[in-house]
Image (cartoon, rainbow over all chains, first blue to last red; front, side, top):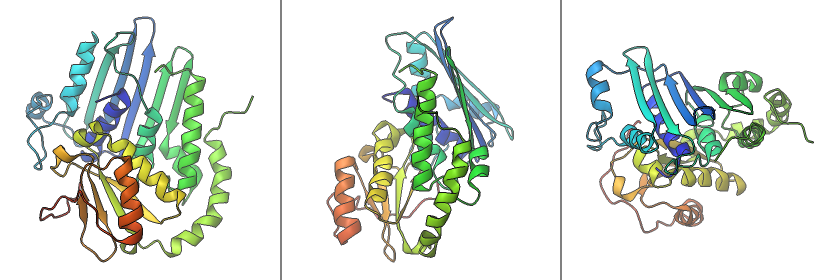
Amino acid sequence: MKDLSMHILDIAQNSIRAMANLIRIDVTERTSNDQLIITITDDGTGMSPEQLKQAIDPFYTSRTTRKVGLGLSLLKQNTEMTGGFFKLESTPGKGTRVTATFGQSHIDRPIMGDLVGTLLILFCTPDNPDYLFSCQTPSGTYSLDTREAKKMLGNIPLSHPDVRTFLKEMIEENLKQIQISE
Amino acid sequence: MNKIKSLADLKKLQSEVQSKIKLRENGNNSEQLVQIKVSMSTCGIASGAKETLNYFIEELERQGINAIVTQTGCMGYCYAEPTIELTIPGKPPIVYGYVTKTKAKEIIEKHIKLNEMLDGIIPIAYSSIDN
């Protein structure tokens, strides 16, 4: 993975496959202890303790189309390369939480990349679950709940091109306002 | 300084879009629309499927081509990512491999508009998967 936004997209796809209704994405920059924390929490099917143990094994996957499952292991590797850590918690029937902590200023930390692009893909695909996105930096916090957006829009889907353009501009402006780092 | 957009501004947009959407809805039978599924799992994302997907959405919208662009899971052609599955109404789905932006442009110009097949089709008896 070239950047962190791709990791977020990748892990969120796991949640979608786990039939989640609501996915929380939190990005937190903590300058006090030089950490960048990404948390993805879903209310999907969850994993059994056995599956949980195997999940970070690159040669384990629940898919049948291929024999490897690299998403979580790549993320784990990237966090550990920057002096951070990786945590995976799951309860069957309740959901799963992935916590990836990076050393914010570590030279090996991948850049954030196109976070807005990731969010648009997640938010604007028809039949996708709802999202609660939150980004916290030392300059402030920005949160976006797609359930609220859907309420505002009534019968117009989030995938409508005009809505997509609006969301793009809105998220870009707000993230710039709280000075999200690269 | 311009005011930063917020969700409250969506309300305004809603009424504007409402009038336009009526026109679209008439033809909005998904069976009759071109469908593009971009494979979006670890292998696809790492190879740039995100740019491919966003390019398809933006370019088709820019050219006013009414199509459905969605995501799908890994089809098992990890070596050829980014892959897409293209369905022209009334025809069996076709899988293209190595779909970068340049290839995506070619697919729109030749396959979607003129119905000419291009190089890069993954020529395996293929059945569509659900996720």
